[in-house]
Length: 419
Image (cartoon, rainbow, N blue to C red):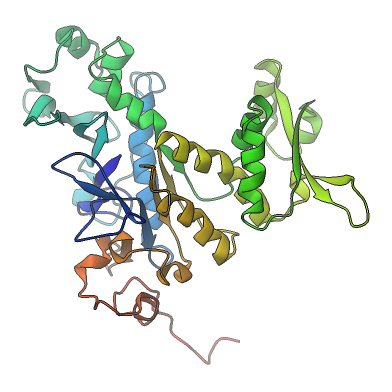
């Protein structure tokens, strides 16, 4: 369960911005669920982030993606001496010389974890982890901080962090995370932190690969009927789906992607291309006519691609973060995807999505599920909850947002000089 996320000095976010899934006030079971944790008793199922183009919505998603990638891959992908691909705020000289910080609070197996780190392109400057066991007090498990005067790390370990702490500490490179290093060296007590990030699903802008859904349909016979039902409920007239494996046409692939990449795929083994075919009814016949997924509309392909992560998060109480959820999708389909998470009362699945679709403000979202991004004249972006505004009980959120009452809308200037 995601509780909160904070970022500072990342892309357009110069100052620390804090995002939370905590429920404010009373919310129905449709919009929030009970956690069983006294400190965070109820969390929102969905959070939608609105704002004009270029206001930081995508950068927020990329910040979460960067943190996830750092936890999962800082040890095995970054070699000593490589630069860390961090991206600080570029419109301030002081920001360029300062580290970028990420902090996240999540619940795993009834335990609250508060984890964070600060990095620049050369090193990890700080890293810390605090843990709150069920019915217990919060405990600082470890902290590390680079001291620029001595050019050494200052370390602190709490008594609750059991295991080969000195071995993990000595093995941690300056450009790698302690958590990642310790888990790679078989730390069982820190494994839940890495496992939480491994189960997190972050989908950037653009078309999400359909291969995940196709692979699951090919390997799991029970998944295909659920996939068909998922599409049918969205008014896609499909009655059967067949997924086949075919040899890759490398010459055809080379027409779309660089030849070195094609050669790498060729040498990597017996790679196969997955082809998905939709069985559609034929008037006057009992037989179906099959169309390749590539012959379907952008929206249908996108909905098909979402099927695996959406059903996965419902089945396993996972969290998905999506940039531009409404891209190529009709408003009714966006409402359908949001509704699957919001109405699943037995699930603790969560969705965080950036959107432009304002029709969700007509009852598909509860007001404290709405967040807003806006960029100032100094190019620094802010992220604030709608709850920061005094929204009247029966106020139309759609009218208020489009009317600029909450900000976070583009300031379009009409002009007669453009032809």
